[in-house]
Each structure stands twice: as structure tokens, then as C-alpha cells.
Image (cartoon, rainbow over all chains, first blue to last red; front, side, top):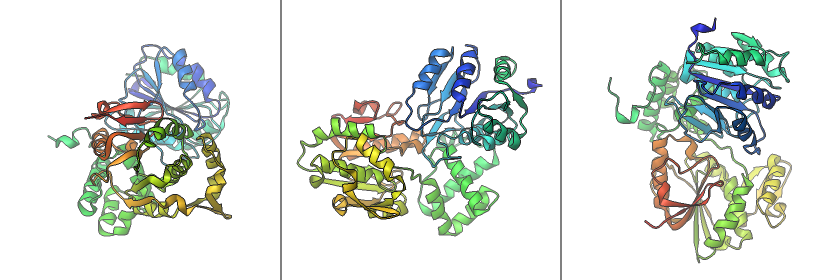
Length: 193
Length: 284
């Protein structure tokens, strides 16, 4: 079923419990992973880049906090910095913004997903992981409307099921999977270009 | 189809993107405000936000309303101007200015500091407080500018909501504040009103970094979280303007995630604090 998708970028949204989930997901991606991975993980505005450094140490891919107007490269993992929204530009660069919080969050998953959907259209995979709020539901809806592949972590498998539930209800995603199954899906070379 | 150079990197594959380009052209031609080189993803989000608020279905429909009614244009300006700010935002930045910049500024008999894109002024008053504590306020002329006339007016009042005062007090202390923060304002149930003496030497003025020229020649420019809303080309243009506005040896402070890296201006500055994005203008 996934063969019809030709994914060029993956966006991931996570909130409560996301640190543990990403700590499992990111190291499991193969060193040859062909797409960029853009991540919003909700965190305190004051946090340092400890999380990014930890992921970078654990993952075969380069994991970095986004620099303003950075060019998106395949096989890299980009993390939204604390207290900034992350946006995808149509020229393949990344922008940051301090506009007001969306769903009480900055960075907001919706902002990343909606702007990424606008640029990548049907070539985008959106993944909603564990979380205790409803951020990401509208963003994932935008991914689906533009023809992209929508994936939500199964609420029973998530440390905090509220965010997956909200996304499932809003979007009726293509796939509801456990974290292990999401890793398996990402590892299939057929899905990502 | 051959596009003009300035438009080569834009995506016109959807009608919506074409409509957005036309709207920004129209706004520039009619009102002189130039958002054409703002970060497109950001502008698109904000424009869509206004579409929802005005109950229109397309950007073309919004353009019609904006062109024929100045009030709608003014709402667009407010939508595109990001005014999220706080007092002593990123306290480590203020600490670094206190430690690395003010000792040098103290050697001048008279100082000018420009807050470019100051929004509602929280950081301007923060600076004034810090300058006062370092004995510099009396001999400093502060310029506080923004392109949004509403927020400049607000900034001039020096009145802020009491809602965030606890956070500001913490920030003030972390920033190396030497007194009691509450000495600087009077509070009622809703508002805090800052000491009038703080703004004695502050000039609040409308200034657009995109379309206006050099504002003054100053010892320091604070321009934090303004450039992130511009594309690379515009960032370079604005950085040139800021460079021209600084005296040799003057200081430039940018937002935590902004940098001179990739810009043509990088080699014209010495880095004072790489993490807090403080730079010093070199000799030509």
C-alpha cells in the first residue's frame, strides 16, 4: 500500500513522552536514510540543546538544531529550537518565527506540518507521536489534504495518548501504527526517495 | 517562462502562491510597504490568518478588500508585524551586554543606542534600566523604532500588562539586575507603569528597515528577532543598512538564532559573544 507514495521529506511531531519515543526512533533510522526529517518536540522555552546533542550521539544521521534560513539536506534530522516556530520555505530552506503560540505551543507542530505540506505536497510523510495535547491534528490534516502520507502512533502504544487520539479523530490517517511499526515503515527503502 | 531574477527562487506552481505574489506587489504599489522579500512561508501563514478573520475565501478576494480600504491594509500590517517580546528576554544576553559591551561604551562621553524593530518596547525599557544601573542612562540617547505605528505608540507609553511581571522580575534578576525590579514601576490591578525618568532620553519613531534609510549613526544597534522574518537577500540589505548606521567599534546585537554567517557582512565584524550574537564593527 505504501508503494504509491514517493516521500521526499518526513515531519514528526511529539510532545509529552516524545523524548523517549524519539530516542528509540532516531537511532533506528539507517545511515543511508534518504529524506530529511524535520521534528517539533514540545519543550520548555529555556531548554538548552541537550536533547539535540543526545540524539546526535545516538543516531547514525546528523541531528541538529535548526539554524535560521538553513538549506534542507537529505539524510539530516532537524530539530526546531525551543521558543521558535519552524517553517519550511518553498526554496528548500528553513525559517524560524516568534509569532504567538499555536495550541499553547512554540514551536508548534501545526506550523511545521502546514508549511511543509505546502511545499512538499504529496511527497510528505507526517507522523504524530505521543503527546498530551491536540497540537498537530490540524497540521496532519493539511498533510493529508495535500496528498501526503499520514501516520499516527497507536494511542495504546503512546506514553501519552491524547495527541495521537486528537490526530486520529481529526484526520482519519492512512496508518495508525506502534512505534516499532513506524520504524519499520521508515526503514522500507521503497517509501522514501 | 523566464522570470525576473528577484522571482526566480519562488514557487508559482499553485494559484495561491501567484495570488500571494500579486497581493504583496499590490500592497507595495498602493501603500509603499514592501513585504515582497519577507520569509514567504511566514507571510503566507499570516495572510491566511487574516483571510479567516475577514471571512474571505481567496487571497485575491483579500487583495480586493486591502486595495480599496485602508483599514484592511492596516490590519494586514498588524498581522505581519510580530510583537511577541518580553522584558529582559534571554537574560544571559543582558548579562553579556553588561559584562562585554557596557564597559567599552562607558569610555564614550555621549552614547547613542538604536533599538531597530522594537515592537511594544519591553526590551527598550529593559535596556534603559540596565543603563541606569551602570550609570550610563543620563548620557545615552536611545532611539526605539518599528514599522508598525500602533506598537510604537504603545511603546512610548511604557505601560505593560501586569500578567507577566513575575516572569520579568525573574528575568531581571537573572540578567544581573542590581536593585529591586519593582522600584522601576508602579502597579495597579492590571497594569505596570514604568518610571517616566527611564524614557526621558528615548525617542520613539516609525522606521521601516526595508524601505527607509540610515536612521542615525550610533554606538550600538539592538535588532533582535527581526531578521528572521526576511529572506536572505533582504537580510543582507538590512545588514548593510545596520552596518552603515554604526560607528567603527560600534556593537550589533542580533537574536539568539540569528547570525551574520552566510551574509556578506560577516567579515566586517568581530565576534564579541558568539552565543548571544553580539558583534563589533571593525575598521573599514
